[in-house]
Length: 187
Figure 1 (cartoon, rainbow, N blue to C red):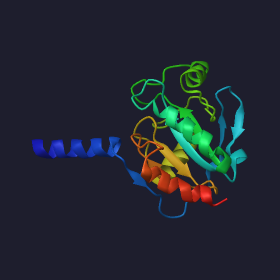
Figure 2 (figure 1 turned 30 degrees about the vertical axis):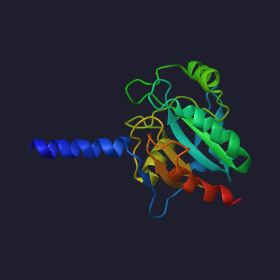
Figure 3 (figure 1 turned 90 degrees about the vertical axis):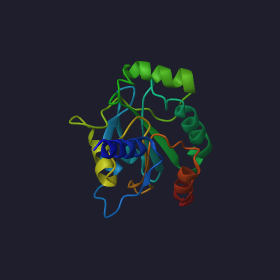
């Protein structure tokens, strides 16, 4: 019994922390363009404003071991924005209180520490009973619940999720770039 417990625990940790890429199967109803969100300054933003772009949705947190990924996200944004990439960051406090700050504090943190220029939105919930409708769509479309901070959902130019990357995946990883490049090439 003890061995079964440890095997299950190991499998759970590998799934949560490992490098897992998944692609949704079947027909996805709707798109991210059907949603409206609030930016970090409290203004409504229609995701349809991003129509025709390749989108990377990332739930972020300021006090997480993965927080340094902000630097690589910003570098990728600077390099590929002209090719149609938009990185959309959604602060969330769902994991061990690692994003406790207000929207103003989060905005200052991102700007001061990482020079973030990609859009950062108002803090939301990415799991549980109060999950934001956008994240409900992303998780249901891909069959991939958010496991931790810095999980990434890659969305094609039609607004459909095409891949999910676990938090440990960095945007500099070969596997990520192999999924991203063909999407950006379809201009």
